[in-house]
Length: 230
Image (spheres, rainbow, N blue to C red):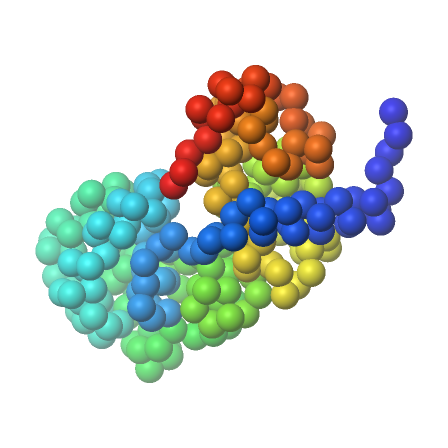
């Protein structure tokens, strides 16, 4: 068994990213937003639920509470009722109100384009900060969610489980300018092809680059049935 050199790993990782661009040319953030604040709140709400569920919830939320000041002064019961469909609605309501209050008190109601400032906000971790930086401000960021972590481990890029360590590992393989779009491409692939339980290996265009390509469904016809279109 040969050990892959660092140079070979970098080349394979970057080729994987290039092929992902062909497979998922429409990859993008699947949360609907019109401003950095809307993306920040939507990303916080996306924990333990789907982007579709969040997108169905945020129009009412932002119609009722359109800015940081409105969120800071939101009636808790009304806010919780709006957020109920997203799950964990009481905790999410606390975070949303806390974000509004912190933005008003510290940043004149505006979302800061700074990672350290973002992660200081209630309910905001590094993953959320990177989403906001990448998609609202154009600052390259790697979003290590469950899909990205799962796929880069299957691809043999790292064995780390901790998201921050995974982020560091991937950052050393993929060009910085590609970080944001790479995250979206990988999330698209994880949601549509490389599923957690039964990946559609027999229908995956990355199988020739993936050392784990034998863990999923190998039959091309059965694998194709596992592929999701959205």
